[in-house]
Length: 365
Ligand code: GN1
Ligand code: MG
Image 1: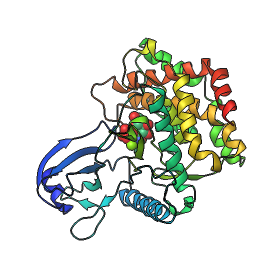
Image 2 (image 1 turned 90 degrees about the horizontal axis):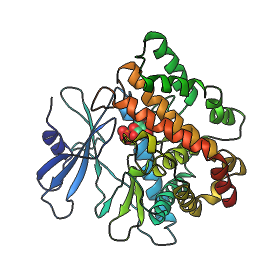
Image 3 (image 1 turned 180 degrees about the horizontal axis):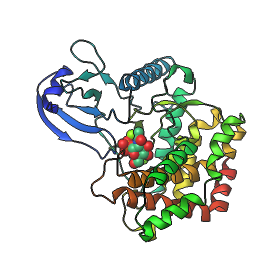
């Protein structure tokens, strides 16, 4: 297999590559931080795209370029009033002007600029941080609210369509005899109790209550970049799933990851809970820049979105465990089962606080 060091050179960095390290904790792609000896560009991000998941990676790159171009144009025409720092990751080109490089084994590589002076966090410690995370998602949606979704390809058909995941789950179940551990029994029961309700967002879309818009697709808390000096949110990274969808998928994903103080990799299942104070602050930050493009109907489905995307991620992890870990990277055989239970416990906590969460949303309308 080609070495990432050799691939890094294909993206014509200014200067020499002096270091390359695995970076971040993505569940799908392989990510490396490349360090250069040039003063102008100290780092960039190199990634090998998982083409088992992203079957048409050229379309993924096309969407990212459409997105970055749109936002750059928009910010040039209408700079942010607050003059706050806002960064748009840039796709780096190869020596012959391509936005990706396919190596001799057929692996698909691409490079993205690295945002200096900023960090990401797996969990949220306080309400200021929560507001910044919400602001970043709101600003992200705001900046693409005028990009027609038809200009983006559907790079992952079925992504966040919960009924499709349920269908796949049924297929997997019909082919396997799951081990009878109490965790597996809990998961099987958990999913079967929520089959009918799981159509809620797709039904709202079919009835015209919610419409397709460009979305991020994976705006979990650790994809939000926070300026190290000011603590302000300045960018949303990981643009692979930018495509048409419901903004509710994004709102749900951002909140399910932000409001889980133990993080999605915890093994303390019995202590997993959804923090409604963080939820309130994230929503405040979000609405400070998203209010203008939200409809009444959009507010009606925020609670369901939080519950559904949490449940859906649990279902995706659980199915992957039953299927033999074919989608998400794992560190041990029961890893996806453990992750599934965390999301199911989080879903239970959301359900038990439905009244309070709905009240928070209602108060902000
Ligand atoms: C995957 O690879 P990563 O961590 O960026 C997944 C998301 C999940 C997330 C859970 C394309 O994202 O949908 O929410 O894991 N991405 C894809 O951590 O399936
Ligand atoms: Mg991602």
